[in-house]
Structures are given as structure tokens and as C-alpha cells.
Image 1 (cartoon, rainbow, N blue to C red):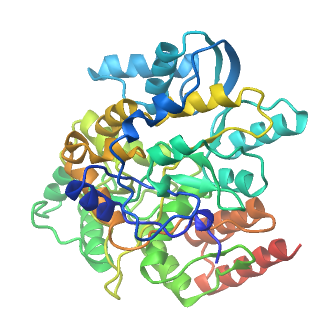
Image 2: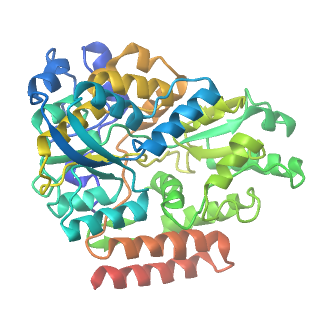
Length: 465
């Protein structure tokens, strides 16, 4: 069974890494050498902090185009304005990296681009590849694994590989690291304590250990809310935003959606998962849990304060704090079998196309993206595990927020899977999963049995083409 991380080996738990680091001197957050070792604790060597400086080429003239998530001029201005309004410092990793690059390499002439996210980003980057106008840095989430498998990306210099935990790397077909994410995450269950209290639930003693516990609490909030306040459930958006949040519950049952040359949708584990998704959808206002715009759901939690529970990554802590929510957080509830599940999420991989004409300058930009100082500031400001080994080893990071520790705890519970990648027609198969299976569960009255039969059949057709 192939996942987007199978090319880099097994995923090593973050907490185990953190514990190893607290006993040694380095820490890790994810990663991969050319052949990731299950025995390696990913600890940084004493000279690791000097690796980037020693390996980087001297400052020289360079003109390059780099695609990122928030380092274009408009995004930089927005980050500054938002931070000023909130009375906080900017902690976005793209913003911090650009500032560092501009200070470290003043002779670089950089065209800082933002081409969107998800399918839009992939399409624009693919169009650039086809036209021969290769950016010097490309980035993205699931499709970066496909780029790696297709040989589009240049191998990362060894000093960059050594800077980060192996779980934050993507490798090519030969097992060589070709892209790195400055951060990664897993899902947790956040809740508004005031809304629970208003519904007659003690937020300090509420039981959220199992699916049944969570459903009972959410049902109670919805009933007490009289159509104005809702408990919340598992989103079933018709895109990856839904898939990412459904998969942890399938994972808890020991199920998966296959990967590579196999797709597994019509299974007892998937049927049980979808029945729970459908039951919990009653705790959303109509169209919110399965809407195309997932922002509406999180606005209800953060700004309107009319949804009690959300499934989200550690970044939700910053949103809750900035909106003055009296919130709590726990690991995702366990299934009836006593097992909890999760999925790797929030990885934003950066790589240099093999056909870039400015490879070393581009790698210098990536070095600054995963540099220790940038990573520490980003991790503390956004409550997100960083990739840099030394940054994750810092007490200031580890102790900065209990939510960050919760994420580390979740990643320590066992191997955390990634969403799968399919050998043929990957995007078409994902469209089937997202729209005709997950979203159809809450948007139609079809039986789960029929939904899974149809989904399995259509996905298999695409896989066999």
C-alpha cells in the first residue's frame, strides 16, 4: 500500500523524537535520510547548527523566481497588517524566511510568487513545467510526492537533509530526498468551554475519550442551542479538507483507502466510519459541515462562537487565542476498539526543479526557510511543530504551549499515515473519494452501502485506465 510518505520510509513518532532529544542535545520533527532508519533518533550533531553556513555558497548575484505560500508582496503586507491589528509579531514561516533571505543575500534579485494552493497551485506549476519556464522553487502538499516520483525535483544538498527530521522530507523513486516541509501537523479536537457550560456540561470534567463520549456531548450542545448553537462533528467537505478530517477516524478502525495500484473504499471499516460521519453531521447547521468553503465552519467556531467542537491541527490554537475563546483541546476520541487514529497534515513541501538555472541560490532560500531562528519563531508563534532538529529541541519551543505538546503526544501514539497517492489518475480518484463518497454521505440519503459500492467501482475504473 503506497502513501505519499512510503518513499521516505516509516513515519517516526514526534514525541519519541522529542524525548530522545531531551536526553541528548538535538531534537527532530520529521524526516528522512536517503534511507531513514527506525533506530535513528534524528538528533542533531554538535556541528549541525553550522551546517547551512558552511555548505552555502558565498553571497553572489542571482536572479530567481520562487513560488511559496505567503512571501509575495501582497501576502507580506497582509501578514504585517493582521499582526498589527492583533497586537502580535508576524510568525508566518514564508514571511520570516523572505526577511532572512533579504538580509542574508542582498545581492539576490528574487521574484517572490504566490500561485495559490491545492489544485490551482499544481495546475500553474504544471503549466510552467510544460512551457519550459521552470520556477527556481516550487512547493505544495500531496502533489509534491508525484513531482518527486516523476523526477522533476533536484536532490536536496546533504546539509539541508541533515538540518531536519527525516519525516519532513519527500524522496524520489531512488529514495533520495528532493523536497522538505518547514512544518507538519496532526489533528486534535478543540472545544469552546463556554458553549459546553451553557449546555449544562462541565468543561473541566467532560469525557471525550471515545466516539460515543464526543457524540453525546455534541448532541447535548446542539439540543440546548435551539438552532443557534451547534455541537459540531466531522467535516465532509467535497475536497481534501473533508478527506483529511475523515481519515483519522477510519485509521482508528484499522482501515485505509489503499494507495499505489490499489484502492480500498468498500470496506467494513469505511462503512462504520461514514455512519459516524453521517450521525455527527446532524450537529452542524445545514450546508456547513459539507460546504465547499470550509472557512464558514471555522468562522462559526472562532468569530461567531456558535460551534462547540472542531477537528483541526494545532494552528487552531492561535485562532482560538486571537479570538478570545475559552477553549480546551484533547486527542481525537478513540473508536470502540479502543484505538485512536490520525493522519499527517499541514505539510508544505519545497523543492528545486532539476531544470532550474539557479539551483544553489534556490537552495540557499530553502536553507533560510528551515533555519533554526526562523523555525523557533514560527513554531512558538503558530503553535506548530517545526522541521528543524535544533529548533524542536529548544525548551522555548517544547514548553511554549500545551497544545504543541498535545500534537507531539498524538504523533507518538504509533505510525501516523499520510493520505495515499495512486499510480494512475490520482486526481480523478480523489475526486471520487471527496465528492461521491465522503460528501455524498452527508449530502444525500443514499445508503452508505450503495455509496461505497459506487465509489469503489468508479475509483477502480480510473486506477485501471
